[in-house]
Length: 287
Ligand SMILES: [Zn+2]
Image 1 (cartoon, rainbow, N blue to C red):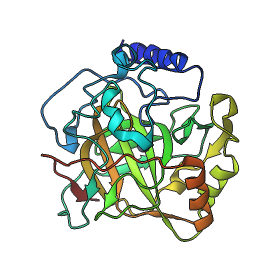
Image 2: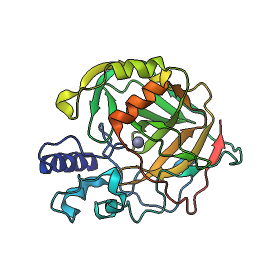
Image 3: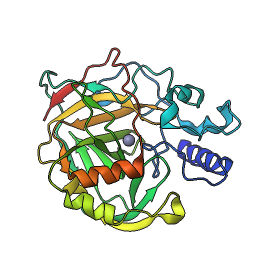
């Protein structure tokens, strides 16, 4: 039921914005809007619950004439006026990560990624790939999540020791209960990345669903071999900033050539939320 409500709210938002490119949040798009209504106490990353604040009422609750869909990276202080918890949440993302975080016992992160056919769209906030089916899965310990979409941010949203890599890739997954798990992958300048090159070759020529391209993405080739990761409980990094997202940020970046990074930056523009306070949360580092 919540999924339908969220989907219709998104449709309203899109309709209310006069057919401009998609305005939903990057993390939640691609059939990812459903979130359960549970709102519990602070939870560790091992059993983070899905977002407490579903975007179902986003449009109705928006105080502005333009509705909840309008937001911009250039004016993040205004996100607090968009429906959601962007201004009030205590477990928001992104955060700064410390390479000095103590190594801890964390569940195995096991992506089972096969090349996937799907659509590649510039939705006005990011470049996003959404598969036509969800054959790709992610196991975190014994928890199974289906791959929903990936998208980019430039510069990186999470910082590592207060330093931001030039870009960050988010692989978004959802389990049967509607709970989200995201793998974050940093991009650093280095060797050209063939998988990224293939994506950029299929890049949409402009914003909006009507200019989406159909491509096959080699998901596994966009992951580094080392799966050591930072685990913490966070949120969507775009309005409505819903919490209960299980974050898994890989410590090791993948490389992309300077030209590839430059192209991403050119297409994406500034597309990163500011780092949020960690508050009472613990970030675990493990493999
Ligand atoms: Zn993202």
